[in-house]
Length: 76
Image (cartoon, rainbow, N blue to C red):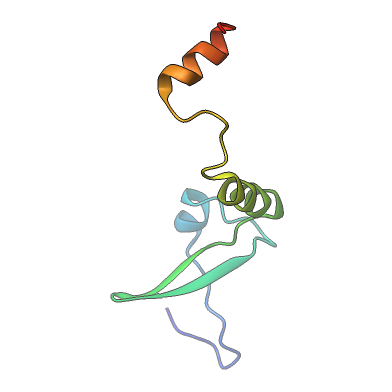
């Protein structure tokens, strides 16, 4: 594969199919110790979900599994 003068490269069809890279799919480039990783960018919905999960971490009203089990069973 060669990089064009515009910095473009064609991702082989077998890889596009394998990883679900459809036309108009946004991708991100990450530098790794082994080189450059190309992967689909998080969709708006996925990014929002990840943000919500990060914000909610550690915010549960129960502290133990026993408390959670009593709550889900309707026990007081």
